[in-house]
Length: 357
Ligand code: NAD
Image 1 (cartoon, rainbow, N blue to C red):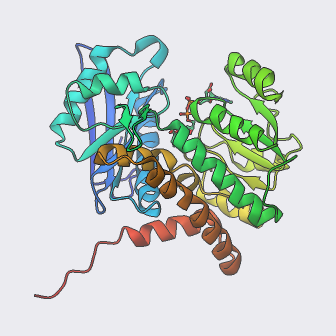
Image 2: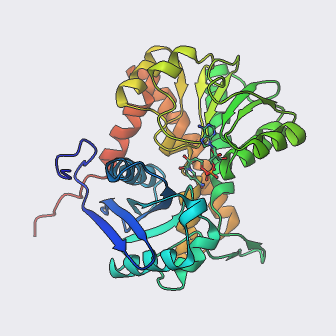
Image 3: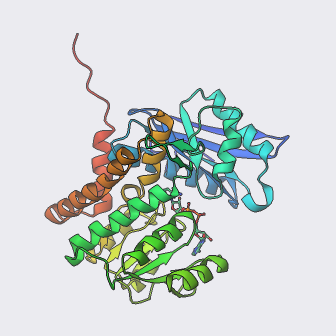
């Protein structure tokens, strides 16, 4: 398998394949760009069918982190790591420590955090052997409270604000009362987002492979549950993908009745071309790495050691303004929001011009 010719390679600065036979760890660490600071991004633990799928995923996610941090104006580069395996069956503390030792060897070029399949508890184990990890320490806020290292509530908050921005822009409304939101995935982010939306008066249609989460949403949030493949065709105003990537594709787009796509999942569009189709159909799409930046903002402040809830929340609230600006420019320039976000991020990643001496 060629790395440099890989369709998702995109000039990655560094890619490591790591293996620890004693613990059974097999992982890939990808560092896309460190122009703005050390690369930071989560560690996904997932049962990839083969190494090629794992590589494609980590390269796409890693580039997304460069773009995400650049547009969120964080002093961070983009990177990501994937551990190959089933987290429920194979994950062990020995593996997480072995993974941490590899991070230590990279000397801070890449800083890990949790992602799908890894938790605060896992990152605390990684923290035993390296400081190059975030999203694990309880934060002592300047107000004297203790806050968990889990970035998911911050991600959900950013997504909620992003949905508000899309609703204001596309539906010309400043409230969510009575709007129907279809949520795909009721995990750490999706469930918290569902709670905020229900609190704001939205009606929820939900789906998840985890029946327990679905029942909980029915019970606690009065959500309507539908089958995994039925979510797309439901009558709804907003589709919020909060599970996997590539669930917005030509097949699902044909069925979607929503006028807004705004959720937390990374890599929601299967291809860049789908982003253009979304735009051509007149749908308002909040680019994934813009709307889901709340978590990276949260762990960035944790890593810097200056966690002030008000400042972190203000930074997350910038997601609303960034999206509004994107929606307006997309209409003005007749350009898909997905392409526009990529262009803006790439501009920010340009190396500073060398000054003549
Ligand atoms: P999670 O693993 O806690 O939740 C994912 C949920 O999706 C689970 O409940 C799972 O059962 C469900 N799911 C899996 N396959 C499904 C399917 N086919 N249909 C419907 N539901 C399905 O993950 P999370 O932390 O909530 O993250 C959700 C998404 O948001 C991921 O794509 C993640 O990369 C992205 N994201 C998360 C954060 C964060 O702070 N956690 C930050 C940025 C982006």
